[in-house]
Length: 328
Ligand code: 13P
Ligand code: SF4
Image 1 (tube, protein in one colour):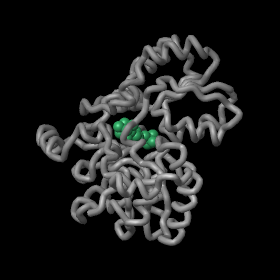
Image 2 (cartoon, protein in one colour):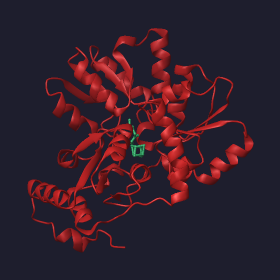
Image 3 (cartoon, protein in one colour):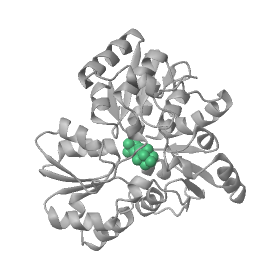
């Protein structure tokens, strides 16, 4: 297997972003490739992509595309999901080191042990998990549909929810369902804490506050909304795509955004008449930022790195994903 080395990188030195983007687009046309990018990707990758979106939107695009190749500009579990949904396509991830600290908090063996402890429970796994973990789950969910998935599970069923504890706690509060929650977290979102939100509310009292449910501040923010300390009409817990939709429709001019800062590029581009402020400017995912224009070009030139999932694992994981899609 080839990898992107410093020798490969040297081939692209001296090229501007415009020139690299043009080559990426040209080669994508030749290869009949679609370029999918997550909302946290660097600006030049978002700009070269055919579609930019959240995990749910990217899964839908991957399932629906008639391209031969999917160049996936995101992290490994997302490319795996695309490979599960589009098994006949070539799915490329430009850098295999684009992982996810949250997905790494739970393994297939962990799920097997957990299931053995609660044999009658239903396992709901967030999309930020490996294909093996999805294969052992009854339902998958994303931040865009997690509430609907939990609400669709019969009341008398115990639920094992993994791997994000902040999203799990938020879902318990929203749905009133008690769940067993895996104690995993994303190091980027966990770092967006209540103190950041408190400061933002003082500095921007008339702003809308958009919070991703993986954030470390979610539980406290919900508590304060419940107590009336934070106005409920200006506090919104949303997936990244939900944030884009909300930014377009709100009448407020300033929005404080509590998630990975890559989304600010898309917000500013698509909603240029409003001001967006990162709640935590240091909330940057180094895994997402591993994907660069030279690596995207290299991936298309070499058709690397192909992401595949063993057929038995893919078939089982697909069941959990299909059950999610049927609900949302
Ligand atoms: P979204 O599905 O809201 O985009 O979030 C997924 C995520 O955490 C990617 O890092
Ligand atoms: Fe994973 Fe967090 Fe990065 Fe998203 S932001 S890919 S959850 S490490």
